[in-house]
Image (cartoon, rainbow, N blue to C red):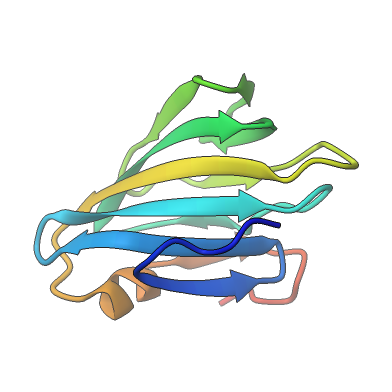
Length: 126
């Protein structure tokens, strides 16, 4: 797995993320490393939309009732309040995804708390 970029970051059961840029009341830029055969929780946000751009690898993006396979350069928008999840179907390669968040949060910590989970492989359902 690659090292985190400058800025805040954290490991998760599915991989890791870094937030190299956050602008209070506007949004954030994150980088997600999704480990092989892992997936994020099925979740939604009340205060932010997301735009995912695949940088390396291949991911499966679930947005609402649509599931799409995305490869390098592909992207998808996740509207506010829509259930969504990223998965990495590869048995070998870590997928790298840029996530642009647009929301009104005053701090990165509060933006990270704007998660309602419906399903989670790691027992983190609210």
